[in-house]
Length: 381
Image 1 (tube, rainbow, N blue to C red):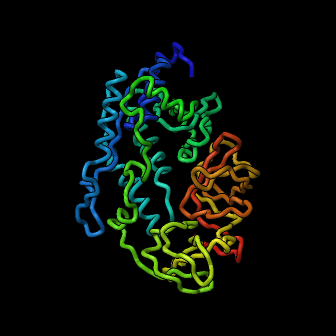
Image 2: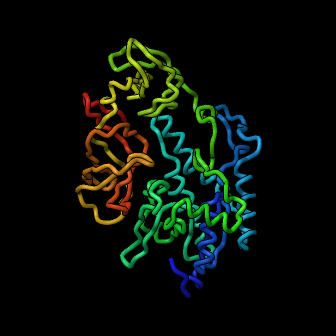
Image 3: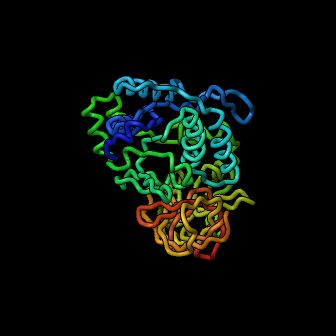
């Protein structure tokens, strides 16, 4: 986006996370002439949370979010922008984390990053920004938005390796109309180069991973503070018991690490999770020679958001982040459900997001509800 007199009159609130991407996004917005306010969102507080018995939990010796805030403050000072700090702890708990737990109770595999964008960054944060009489909100996501007289389109980021349109795929056109993604037009290498040229304190900071706003943890241990694990049997599809599992919620379809199975009955690993029998609390596994059991050819998608005309037909889809585009056929059933058909795709997982694309344009997405597996047409939901 070029520097214009119009930009000079426009006010933007940027979510400054303490990472390099949002730091460079701040620099780009200022360079483009926007009047920028930086805000650090505080969405998680371990001290306020309770485990399944109602006891206080403690996960951090030094809260990573506090370190991020200090980094964001240093960046704001370096770039001459005032930093505000806003708490959305209750909103995050009520709208994101509770959903996250509820999905795990159903033995699904939720994607909290998508919901975090929908409910916090582009709802709670957007509502807060509008009280400041701003024109846009901005984030350091690797995605692009195209504002036209006919509406706003979400596009993949230029850096296909870092593209985050999948995580933004549930945003409505109205939410997108207020969004800017300053680093979406450049790649990660250039972001690092800009940060080094400016001497930003976060120039070499490691990219954040883990659960949105909660960060990197021993995930199973973290989850056990909120949901009791129910151990059970690990079986092959023919019913052969080959071990024990430590709670279905701790496994996802297609998982191969952490199963503890080597060579068994002459069958070499790796072994994969191919399903879950919820009624008998059984984890279903097969080895690398039987991966047809992971392949499916149809999925029911619910609670979808669609930007544009609903036209049945051929598109591309991603069933998980970083997956290559997969050719699919989409059939709209009603305003809440659509069917997506494809050929021999492995590990399509209930609870995850299916994002639909037409070229670089992300048209929308929904949540995977039922999966129709090709071999024996098993249904797992």
